[in-house]
Image (cartoon, rainbow, N blue to C red):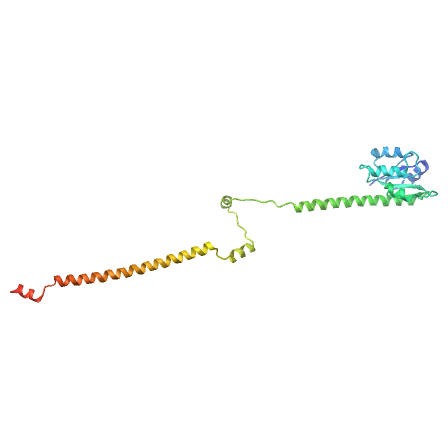
Length: 238
């Protein structure tokens, strides 16, 4: 991937040195002499990293770094401050600028290359981490989504012969369920009916027996009245 490097330094010599250092690297180097020009060039050039001289007159490297980091369109851009070796570097100003690192001038080509590559590697890793984090969030939200529920009426189940799935817990609950008061009441009522029916049958048998005995007695009385005596028979013969 081609690296875009913007050099903002009062010295055109520094601009050329940086361009020569990255001549054999996969990079495009642009140079400006003023901080304001550097910020104006940000929108069109869209650099991956800005090398900003701390001692620029119109807009110092510290101020330029603050503007870049406070702009939501550029705050992901890396900033490397260029400080003079003979000047005392103000660490407090460096930290307040939001810059990612600094290097003292004059510098060797290999040193500036290493600084830039290290910072851009950090940027690439941060982008990868953000992508992974977003993917994880999306997966979590997907897992938390409620599962779709399919509601079927009893008619639908009959027409489609839909199977009824019962879990083991449902079966155990069904087997272990004790009779309700209503079932107990029905059982007791059935038993009472059977006992009453049996009792009525016994009473009917007893009544029938009494009827038979009564009829036998009536037949005996009738026989006595109708049967002829011996005297009646002899009289008839005479």
